[in-house]
Amino acid sequence: MVQSRMSRRSVLGLTGGLAVAGVAGVAGAGLLDGGHASAGNVGAKLAKAPAKRFAHPGLLHTSADLKRMRTKVRAGAAPWQAGWKVLEANSHSRSGWKARPQATVYRGGSPQNYVLLYNDIHAAYQNALRWKITGDRVHGDAARDILNAWSATLKAVSGNADRFLAAGIYGYQFANAAELMRGYPGFDLARFQKMMREVFYPMNDDFLKHHNGAFITNYWANWDLTAMCSVLAIGILCDDHAKVRQAVTYFKSGAGNGSIRHAVPYLHPGGLGQWQEAGRDQGHATLGIGLMGTFCEMAWNQGYDLYGYDDNRFLKGCEYVAKYNLGHDVPFTPYTWKSGAANTHGRTLTQTEVSPSARGIVRPIWAMVYNHYVRRRGLHAPFTKAMAAKVRPEGGGGNYGPNSGGFDQLGFGTLAFTR
Image 1: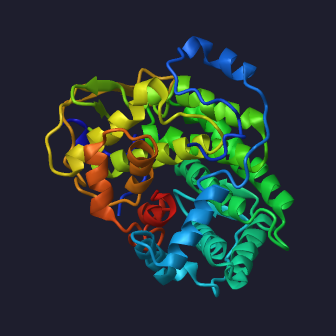
Image 2 (image 1 turned 90 degrees about the vertical axis):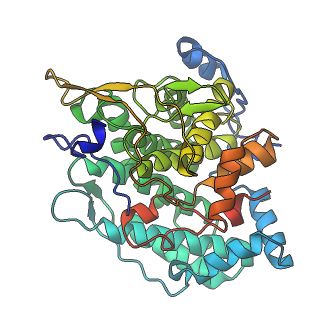
């Protein structure tokens, strides 16, 4: 296989990726289009969508979700209680966590200090979730203080090309923690929103528009998806319809590999959709599933049915990745792309088979997509269902090793998304 023997980066540092170590909130954007809209009319369709009020909380968790978690945990019900126990035991969820804010966060190159950021984000999120479930203000105070410390300090995200990954992953995760803390006494939401608009969003926007000066196919699906998740999350956090429309439009018709028909470029019999990074390695293929699931869930909670877009195309991608990582064979159509800087001839590369690298990797991503497609919508998703059962109960940052790959998802899907 050509790609498995390639370096993860071109000489420009452009092709690297992440290392692997009913509808709630429909009062949001008001566009439940499961959609078969063509790329040509997406913009016009979105432009006609009424600018309704955003639902808050309305990123990964709605008021109804949080009420369900509280009720199930207090009742000791399975499997929520098992998910709660994993959260409760995670060191990041302890109320004594102290923030370590930096003026500039570096990811890629030298120096690097982004480990401080992702650990603090997960501590803020986990403490916020514990406060929402138990009402214990020591956890609310801890989450508030972490978020306030960073919004008072952070001015820039820098590094090599990986800086765009940092701006995307940590952008959407930060926004989710802040959304849970909206209205909490002493939480400076306005200052936090300003940080998200001025530090994270410009980098997300620049990447989606310019792709770091590379060919549009140079970057893998996960690069676009991190930026898309951040733009959408910031738009919702900041009540900014333009940013939400930007993210949704890109999902449907964007030129890069994160848009749905590029992320799932080929459909196969049996309800399978070949994932764009399946020929690369399974660490990144599963990362993409987790990111697109996050994107679709946040959009769903504001009234956009992107899970169902293009005849449930994302579900077909989930089934493909889940089936292969459960040990079954899957079909593979040769995948060809061009890499390098856009002002050069670049290189044309082809993958000819699905990659066994990191096959069977465990990520806390499957409960969310399983519970949407099977429990919420009643669809058939046998391999996604089997993966969700295999990794149950899901943990979060800190449960999957100390490296950044273990913090790519906020996690705790067994607790948060089981219906």
